[in-house]
Every structure is written in structure tokens, then in C-alpha cells.
Image (cartoon, rainbow, N blue to C red):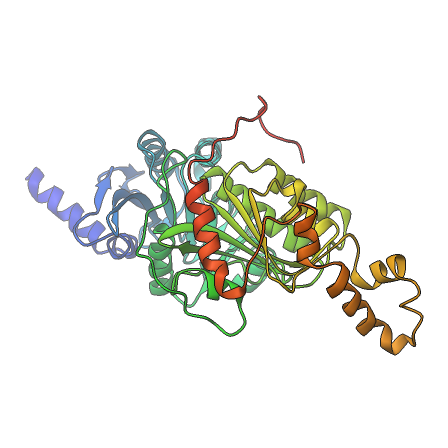
Amino acid sequence: MDMEKIQSVKAQIADTAAYRTLTDFFDADTFCEIDAFAKSGDGLCEAVAGFGMVEGLPVYAFAQNSDISGGAMSKAQAAKLKKLYQLALKTGAPVVGFYDSVGGRLAQGTDLLAGCGEVLKLTSKLSGAVPQVSVVLGNCLGTNALAAVSADFVLMTEDAQLSADVTGADADAKTNAKNGNVSLVVKDAAEAVAKARELVCYLPSNNLTTAPEGFSAEPTPDGSCMVSKTVDGGTKFKIADAFGSCARIRLARMDGSVVGVVRTIGKKLDDPSAEKLARFVRFCDAFSIPVLTFVDCGGFESLSAAKKLTSAYAEATTVKVSAIIGKAVGSAYVALAGTGANADVVYALPDAVVSPVNVEAAAFIMAPEAMKVPVSEQAAVAEQFAAENLSAFNAAQNGYVDGIVEETELRGAVIAALDMLAGKRVPTVAKKHNTV
């Protein structure tokens, strides 16, 4: 009789959307469920949780079960998630959470709040120790949303809702992506599962291991994009393009090894762009992922933007290689490629410009006679002055650039630097963290 009951419960769980999501996420026949028979009130728990393999990598995952009580958060669900997080911390493996819930079992009152608090506490405890990925497939409101956005990366389907406000204000995917709460918006659940699998393959299991190696592949150039011309072909994982339009961040591979890629696109960095880059650099540093920075930047729009990003680069002890591919002006050079960034190696293309101020101001200050031309001609004269006096060669002569390389040589130079720096070890001052 008990065996019949067990089989009946297993069949009931296996027929739910959450169970199917997890079996789609994990490699075939590797999903092992945790607390499969846990009850919530008189019914089954509102979440399915367990562990398995993704492309041969160990991963823990849970999925809120909208087919059972709408996936509502409860004492039982919180206890199941708590066990999952504790196992992930003990064994050092990533956690992926699939969110789809109508809210919480409010009748449980303070017990529910205590359970939610335990989950939030554990997500914070795991932060920087093991990677965390949230995938929002449906409603994710209130404390559920707080837990979801505490992950390192948040993926969200177009029709999902994510908001700390239980009324769902500003909860749509587009708004959340623009505000920096969501790393990637996808069309539907199937694409979300596929993207989550792809992302996990770029992440180390924990902060004591390296990211999984891939096969080296020649670049597949995408127009004039220096990133595509440098990293392994077909390995760019785009992150947070809708947030901070003055810069781009990517996970990619160089000769098979994972790197975090930062690219500025010629403009001054605004606050959202600086915040995006600072978060990404801190993530890469936490998991010892090398940071490859492509610099083409006219500075910062505000002091707060400069402060955030300079602090992130300065504190990061992971491998940092910078390539000046355009202009590196004033604070941008200092923060992204100079002494402020603590960059290990700095390369520059032959036509790159390194200047303490924007090129027109530099020309007026350093060559006032040459700038005594009609206003319409000043920009051209300033560019000519920069080419002759603010070149990468001049910077290299003064020790501010380690090497000048042609565009076709940059990939090889970066790979060589990353190989040499792989054993980098940097002692740090004894402190909890900085306060910037």
C-alpha cells in the first residue's frame, strides 16, 4: 500500500510544470530530487528541488511549482530551499532558481516571514562563494523578488512579472532590464532554460575553482567590433545590454578559458553604465575570472560614476588586462587602464590616444598657437595634435602602456598575457570589505 502511495505522489509531482522545467534544465537522467515527499499543510510542497548535471557540471536547482497552490511561498518551501542552499554551500556548486509564484501563504503569518528571512540570509551567505542564477518564468513579487534579484544573474521571460511591490508596479521585463534588475530578457520558458544552461557553462562551481574550459576557436569577426575579433568565435554571452548604454559586458572565452569582457564605446560613462561595470568586475573578482577591458572612453559624466568604477577595479585582485582601442581620456584611463585600475598589462592599438583631458582641451592648453584657426577647423586640428602628441607611442615611452600591437596581433598578445598571469597571487589588506 505504501509503495502505491509513493508511486502516486511521484507521478503527481512528475506531471507538474516545475518538475518538467528541472528535467529540461539538467542533463538527461541526472536529476535527483530533494525532499520529494515534503508536505505543505495537507498537500505537497509548492516547489521542486534537487541536483544534477548541466553539460557534466554539478548544479543545484529549484523550481516553484505553480501547479501546486500557485507555487506560493510557505514554511515548507522555505525549509526545502534552505536545505538546497546549505548543500550548495557545503559542496561548492552553483544554484539556479526558477521563479513562478502567486505570492505567499499569508495565513502562516510570522512563520512565513521567518522562513523567507532564512532564504534571504542564505542567498547572501552564498554570494561570492558559489554562483547564483535566477530565472523568472512567471509572477515573482514581494520577498520572492528580493531573493531572485540577489542572484549574480537574473534571466526573465517577456511575459513574467518581477517586483518587490506585491501589486506588481513596474514589474514587466522591459522595465526591469532597463533598471538593471535583469541581466537578460528571453522570449519564453524554453529559451530561458536553454540560456540558463549556457550561462552555467561559463561559471566556476565556486570561488575556489576555475571556470570550465572549452575548446579554443578562432574569432568570428562581427563588423568593427573588437571584442568579436579577439575572443573565441561563438562564445559571447551578452549581459545587461538594456542597462547602461555607454558600455557592454560579456562572458566569453579566450583560447578556451573564460574571461569577463568589458567594452566602453567611446562615450563618457554615465552612472548606470559605471554601476553595471562595477557589479560585473566585482563578480569576476569574487570568482577569479580574468577581466579583459577594451577602452574607448571620454571620461565620466559624474563623480559618483567615477568613484564606483574606480573602486571596483582598484580592489579587484583577479587578472586584469586592458586594451586601449580608441581614446583613454583622463579619469577613464586612470580607472580602466592605469594605476587606479591596477591593470596587470595594458596594450594599445597604434592609433589609440591617451590624454589627460579631451583632445580639444589638450590642444588648446598644450598648443594654443595651432588652435588659432576658425572654429569649424578646430576639431580637425585637435585630432591632428592628438595623433602627433597624445599617441599610444608617447604613452608607451613614458611607461603608461606596456605594448603597442596591431589589431591583428591583439588576440595573441592577450592570450599570452592571460597565460602568464594565470598564477597571479595578490595579498590584500586585512578588512571585511571597502565602503565605496
